[in-house]
Image 1 (spheres, rainbow, N blue to C red):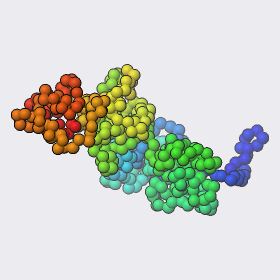
Image 2 (cartoon, helix red, strand yellow):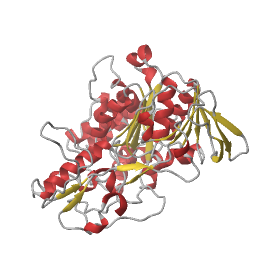
Image 3 (tube, helix red, strand yellow):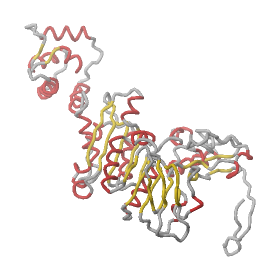
Length: 456
């Protein structure tokens, strides 16, 4: 049911109306999870992520339960507003909390450094055992008093429970079960009360009922929710092509922008996630002060690229710093497009912009690769010469041994050039010099057969 407007557009009190339709899109969202033992109804100074928007005063001190994105963001907000005493209570250790957020550990450590630098206290493995005193309305000079799990006590002017959110799919709140829609029942997990949907159409188990946004659970982001709703409406009226998008994209984690101070942004895999997927990876990192703009305006922060060490492909991008939530969109394009760091290095970025950090991070990753950008240029030369890549090891050894007249097992620069010419590849002296420089690890001025085979 819904409210009724009079002829002037004013909402009539105590009115209701029934609406019907052949198609229904459910976007009822989520609400803050309230754990037992927190006396929300006893005090106007105890909030959750829904009610905090009703705050009408600047508190003297703030204690936040929960080291998730919401808790971190509000800790920054209150700190930026001038609240000097801000505490975050994290039930577990920081590393575990960070992994749950799919956050890169170096970005997380930079966040922690900046939080602590600003005066925010983070209490790991700490939770509330009991609220020992909650001031009544009007007792503005008094503080909320709490006993913590480590036996210590804390007093605070404002308490914020940032203990997660859950979808509004239960029958009591939405009536979906009575409409034949299946609702998940998973206790205190993030998906409790979520609606199960078809990945392709976002249709529920009930005919002609679709769902999008927080109601279908993870990732529960405004950005993904909007795209899910567009996909659902398109499917309702059979518009759009099945090939127009990756169906999993609408149900997976999009780019993340965290509105801390400074902001964070990340997309794709961390090094740990990539290695679990079977990749060999390197990381390229650039600190904000490596760019002129960062050095002058915002030196704190870093940008990291997670790179496939075999192909140079960018698998993940992780940032913390000024405008990170904007910069991440170029990172999304890199990951989704299967772009390599070599393409980043060949791109000219506008001077005095934060985007230059991508090139510095790519350079850092490049020097960690077995075959970086200089090797790529050499390989492209051989491709231009239409060199055959099908020659087996015995053929290569035979050609090598013919040039290796003294039987030393090593060739100098002149002999290397003669070797390539004997194979029908007239490579320039400059290319041979670069091959020797990049391959000669011990400074002998020669290359043995194993090095040659690896290069070829």
